[in-house]
Length: 364
Image (cartoon, rainbow, N blue to C red):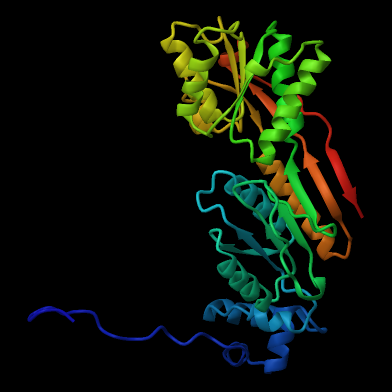
């Protein structure tokens, strides 16, 4: 197309892909011999194999993986179903998952369901049509979801950073309760005794678990929790600022430390404390949750934060999936340990605190 004098774009088609017949002709062997050489089947002389492989490389031939899968029990692919289009939590998990599966020659098909049940089912049907060997389900939140229906439970399904009530499912999650306890234990170890907890909406299971971890640490230290020191709101910097106004606006003895339910809340709280003339950590220590570099490192001062170890979670998911594809039966809820990354906001030089052992509720 184009105006007068323009060459335009010529219509055309991609060159035809090379076939096994082309490879056989180039190598001077039968189609059966070419197929055996490329699939490492049968007994062939090494020079014959070398000729076939060289011909395939010259022609840019790639075996049809779907056709190959019809002749073996595995397709060497797995599906990943997510609704986390933003990727804050899923990307580190996927990176480690892909690394782990690649070590075993397994590739990934990823689909984004965007909280649409019909779209999710369409993706599941398409993945099953590709004869995947297993399915990993993940999300941007860890709250429970309906189980994925796999006909006859014919392949393994793992929920990672996601969970379902299906007793036959395997769910891998970070240990929110243990991570919260790490944070509060650390604050108490630095001499803080009036530790407030500023967190997100109460309908999230993670909020409940992190609150339980907060209480666990206070109890171990012989400190009585105060209802005035618990504040729940939005997952936002704005809520962190508002919570500081409530906690330091008079009427109660102000806390000397804040354990925040995520790094956004912690960053907003640190800003609000500074605006009130309070030093962080001199007057008030602050610890967040998630160890999100965008928030934690850009805060003033940089935030101590609980790391959910999402890369380790992804690697564990890959290892469990490989075991299940191999025939091992795994089910239950497995909570993997978090760790604490200590920075200036809690008053110590940067270092990493050791993580506790796995907290597991798994059947096999």
